[in-house]
Image 1 (cartoon, one colour):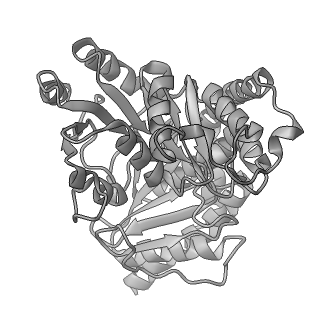
Image 2 (spheres, rainbow, N blue to C red):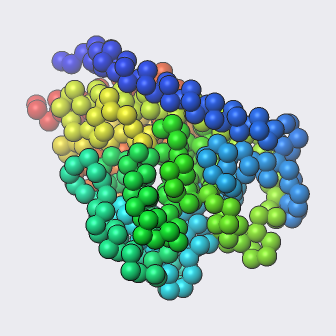
Length: 420
């Protein structure tokens, strides 16, 4: 019988060099965030709630400026009214594209919920396709170090003035691939801008913020989008999302956020802005905890013979650890154990169900203080071959380690039951 304690201890020893590299990245990013706070400078008056129209909302406007600096952009819109990452992405796309325009994806099909938003599946009211906005794509390469099919991308945009946006999805959704690193984005962005300097480069930055020492905006992305209940909220923000980028583009998007003519000048928030400021300040450290936990999960399950993506000691461009199982009962056991090891709703038993916006039954485990927050330990996966789970988060490495002990024992028990 496998001694899981010893398995985890040995994995930690092997990962020490990788953990040290992560610590350097976290320190670098924390300095950038701290510098952003000091440059504004933030004070308790910026935490105060507002009501009504929200004219001259000091906290809202300061939050935008601090986020812009921290994310290496000219400007930002940070709002609790942005419901999730998909909403932030749709807000940017619908704010920047007009009827007849086309968005070209360099990373193939987007993840399930965005497929509906752009109109690749269904024809829901207000989907981009209903407004005459098209979606084209080039698939990622399946092998090799270079993820982008540069020839297909350049052919798709060079003599096509209707293509107004190049879209890159940094994380994997439910695809079996590694996240796209900023280092990999940089040469693509240079070559795209060389042939189409007018094109807008937009990056879905969900799960990727602060995982590396710079953001996609530092290497040529014109606009980036994400959720505050993922990395940038630091496990503190209770809701919200952001869009950040070039000042002229953010202004256009602000007219979609509220109403043309008013844009960012209106919109109040009757609760305190403090959790959003505090969450951003904690974000580099929290992401460090998430990455260490992901590495440990990957190293342990890899050592047990499961296929993992990325490999345990590999540096990452998002906080997600993917693990493939041999049969669905292992995937389900994994998620149930994550839920049981959680501080909230540990007595709940997750089951696969047909979630809105997804193409297959999905099982989700998230015993989190903020519902669905993926900087808190969570796991999910579609019940379809090859039965992969996507684990992310952990506010503390210690919690991630304790959960891993329980999860590993639960999955191994399924295998042992199958052998009997």
